[in-house]
Amino acid sequence: MEDQETTDLQTSTDNQQPAYRIMDLEVSERPRERLAHLGPQALSNAELIAILLRVGVQGENAVQVGQRLLQNFGGISGLHRASFDEVRAEHGLGPAKSAQIKAAIELGRRLTLEAPEARPSINSPADAANLVQYEMSALEQEELRVILLNTRNRVQKVETVYRGSLNSSQVRVGELFKGAIRSNAAALIVAHNHPSGDPTPSPDDVAITRAIVEAGKLLDVQVLDHLVIGNGRFVSLKERGLGFG
Image 1 (tube, rainbow, N blue to C red):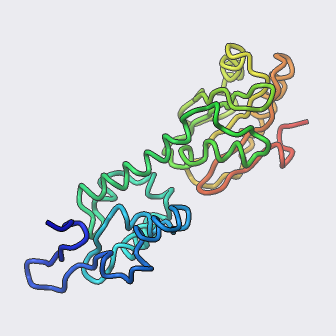
Image 2: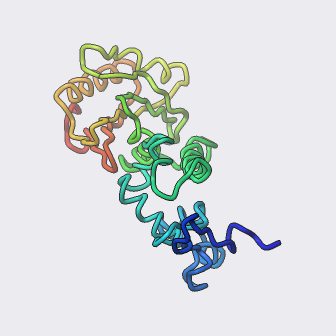
Image 3: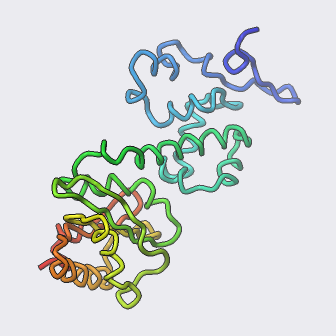
């Protein structure tokens, strides 16, 4: 029996036109064949989603469905933030396809957390942001995390210190350094997210940064930066000279 995922036509009960399949595309345009010959990095986000979907719907092939999902949710990060039910409600997606998409995105998130020893050294604000931005940009509430580094600026650990609305009166600066002292970390980077998606630092963000930097000097733990994570963007307070002497 041939593979039904790629050969069966899916027709509706009222004899409408059949759904579009990846096999209906020219061989050179089929995502699976392109992935096999060129590698996954050569495919667009829509093509990668199409491989998960396998078949389109009436009037849309799988790649076009992928494009629609990315547009409706605002890219991969939007799909990551969306709930399972929100994804399932999209035309052409049932529970199985929605689960496949959410599972694939979660595997990508977990990959960033594996094998800390394999992570590159943090040499710039962008390096630090890349470590936490994928997950933190999808959070629905504020979180403050601390990236602990050794003397070579390699990541030792990423700790979540606070959850919920943050302001300078609520944050106990000493809590941020507990993990650094336990791990004998040489330096740390603070990162927190703005659920609004706008990473513009607030006056409280600057005040917290100033207090953290001063505490780091007393404890002999260098505070390299404070990042504010937004939707697809981040701001380095160190680069902007906010809170750092």
